[in-house]
Image 1 (cartoon, rainbow, N blue to C red):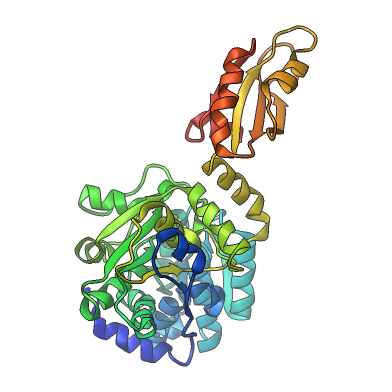
Image 2 (cartoon, one colour):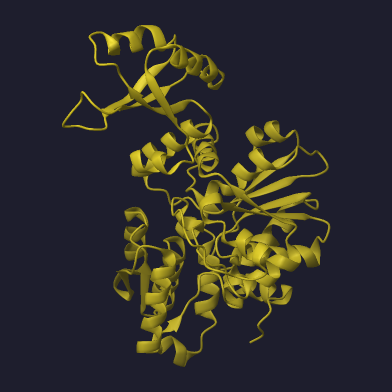
Length: 416
């Protein structure tokens, strides 16, 4: 087996997958088209088998195993979607498997892995991050001889995932001007890039990764894969601390740009996909759309394709999604307010500091056992983001001591 992915491998994977996976829709999106001033199409992998493109890579790899390898069983690490693909393949092909997931994997994804795999698959929680789960899965493979099914850093996985690019070109009707692809470990964008560079070389390829887990951008800046010192796992489907050794050179050579997208922007796109378009996307599934609306210049030179990579979102996360979105778009702000120790101080704040359409959505004394000293944490929601300057002016003119908590500060993360 060659170490470098080729377009021929992707063609072979497409034939292998044809009876198994769906040829998902490539559909126009009016909301994003209006925002960018050009035609925007969504590749709807959220409607794929297992509701994610990951099944393409997992099934292609497992179906490629010899009979002897199949008898040994398989093992993998997954933030959720790859594990569902492995579980689906195991049940379909009659192979035993174990799926290691980090503790941050939403319960909905764990339950789906167990349901898809049935009595063929065991779900094991291995560590707090994907990389810790991967270490545990590799140890299992070495100990038991089970075949490790990598979610991105294997040419068989990348070939299966690359069939997304094959379908985009077949469905588009013309060469896309830009294809925006979510990036975690780099398997999907590597596969798409290999296919596009051979069959549509002028198409611009943009990778979108979460700002709190920008491992590909770090690797490109460093000149090779390296482990991130810190990792925000909110965009769990793309929260990979170190990109692949096989995916990195392909991204480096074939991808035009890799951008980091603020998690708040991802949340805003998730909500717009749901409320306007009727699409349930997980955070990673909203990465490409968020990158297009936030970071790409408007263009009418040709269609822009955004890959909606998955729709396995836990409804219990929507409170956090809404919170992050409101903070990102400037409608929700937090402050530490120290009130003077005199009667009517809180009433003054309500009457003189808060304006029309400004609501308190959180109020909590930091020192719960002594409210006479120390500030209160106050959350305020604005009717319009542009009203912030007026609120800050009134706060400064008041006798109160007010400290704004910026979204990027450690204090903001600690308190909220």
